[in-house]
Image (cartoon, rainbow, N blue to C red; front, top):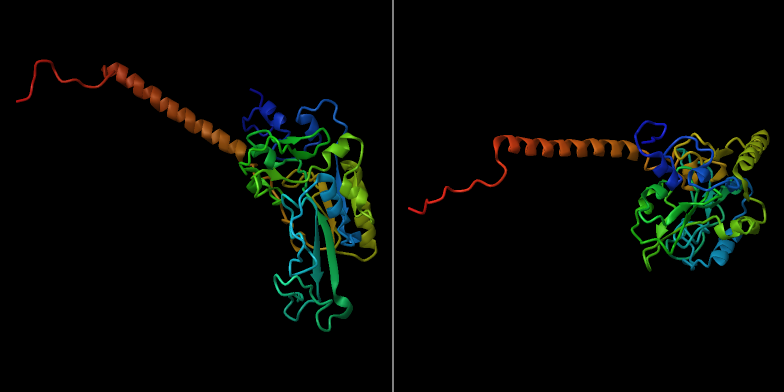
Length: 333
C-alpha cells in the first residue's frame, strides 16, 4: 500500500482522488486531484487598502451566478447589509469603522439601533479625522488543503483543474458535513433545500478563458485575479510600498504555503489584525488529525478481530461449539 509522506498509512491514491493531502506545502493540488496537465493554479489577491466599499463585486457575483437576494436592510452596526459569507452571499464587503482609542485603550464605535435600518453617526464626538474605515471584500479561500473536500461523502465538492474548490449543487445531498469542517465558516446550507453553496471562483467563466465576475467589476483593482504565484509576488511588492509610505499595519493574510491550510487560493492584504476583519488569526485544516484517527481505528478493529478469533479458537479446543443441552431422558421431577 502506498502511503503519504507523513507515514500515517493512508492510501496516497485516495488522497489524490480528493485533491487534498491534509497539510504542508502542495505545489500542484489540481495535479494531485487527477487532472492531466492542469493549466496552473489561479486565485484572488484582495488589496483592502484600495477597497472603497462600493459592493460592485457583490452585485456582479449575484448577477452572474443567479444567487437569490438575502436581505437589503443594514445590519444596524455599519453600512453592511450582507453580514457575512453564506449560501446566498458568495462575496461579502465588510465595513469596519474604527474610532480613536479610548483612555482605557479600547476603541469606541458609534452604533445605530439594532434592526432599525439606520446608520451610525459619521464619527464619535470629538473624533474628527481620527476615524477610519476598513473595507474588505471577503470570499471563499479555496484552500490548498480543503477540509470540505475531505468530509464530503458524495463527491459534490471537487478540485478543479485550476486548483479551485467547487460545489456541484446537483450532487449535494444536504448532509452538511462541510459546514463545520470549513475553518473560515464560508460554506453554508440553504434553508430552502439544505444544499451547500459557496463561491466557485466563476468556474464556468474560467473554463471559457474569462476572469471571475467580481474581479472584472472591481473599479479600483482591489480584487485582482491571476496565476497564484504572480499574485503572491505582486502582493509582496505592494506591502513593501505601503510600509515605505508609513502604513506599518499592512500585512498579508493567507498567502503562506506553510500555514495551517497550506496557503489560500484567495488571500488578502490587510491593514490591521485578521480578527478585526472577522478572520481567524491562525486557521488550520480541521481534518488534519484524520490520518491518526484512521490509524488508531484500524488498531482497534484489529484488536477486536483478534479477540473474536481467540474466542472461537478456545471454543474449538474445549468443545464448546454450541449451546449446552440437557441430557436425554430426564424429565421434570
